[in-house]
Length: 98
Image 1 (cartoon, rainbow, N blue to C red):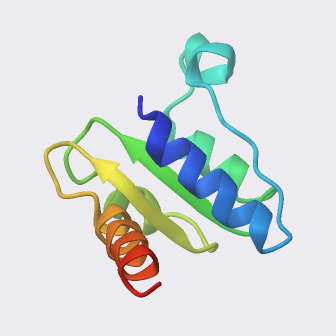
Image 2: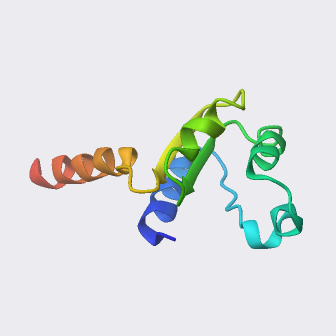
């Protein structure tokens, strides 16, 4: 769970004219035992891009190899949050260059 990550991706997608749907595993077929692999294969049919944040190390790369839509790693396991660094740099640049 990360408010900053969720809101930053929501804001970015909205500012580019896109829409955002926050997937909640606890109220999905995953609660009934569907695998995360099958879930992302289903979700790709409804999305132009998937932004995935998951606690399991390496899962985002694995899931990205299963789908045909682009996948953004919003953090997995102890891996660095690759997009957060870009957001932080953008924020610093924006506020330091006024």
